Length: 302
Image 1: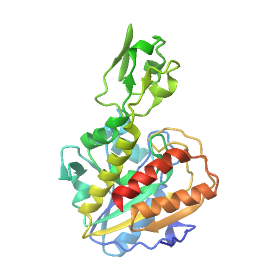
Image 2: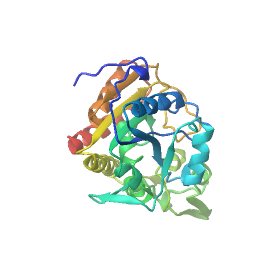
Image 3: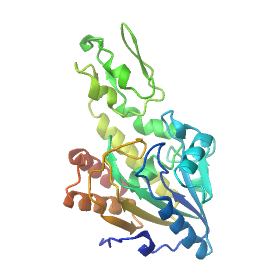
Image 4: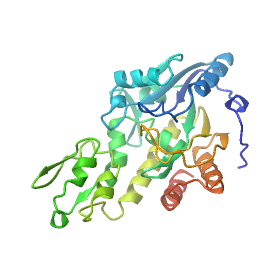
């Protein structure tokens, strides 16, 4: 499929009607690179002009920071400039189950879905774009845990030198020291910081874990798309301020020149084209990891 690169979001065709879920990541506290509130307002205005009823939406996070609760996320959204639109943060207790994946009810029951995605690098998948916005962003916490579970650290106590490096870098307090490392991984988002920090190789992932997690990502994204099989879906990928890590980070270095906006109906195809353009631009992305993810996603979602 051929994609046009748009210089402004105002140039992107938006023709959605009914109750339209505009699914986006509204940024963590202190993150300056998330989707621009002006871009979100532009698509909201055009949907309203079409006679639609749009709302900005996202789900709460697995990690326990400001966006962990509905109330906390609403405060972050307002602080990051999204206070002028109707913002609905999904409640974990209300969902629609499909193929074993739990999709937030407010998203699942919308008449149309607009994925407004800031394309970034990603610690787990190499690139975070439309597929991630579907797979992680549209589901409730227990499904997020399912997706991340294969990547949780495995502890080799016989290799541990009890330096405490992993405990110090864990952002959620999932690790503690009692002579050796004690793991409580219920809420572990598998960020990999403990593995990266360990000088002795005592923290690792089990063989095949990466591939299992990638498959869960793709299956979750496919499940969300199934719910919209008879509905309208539009994907807009924003290739501006592309950062090394996703917008869950408060700060992350920009790794590519600005490219523009892509639009299409297929999340896999638009992500593949986004990756192609970023690679052509020489973006500092973990390309080997993305290529593994891309192959698995293509096999599951095509």
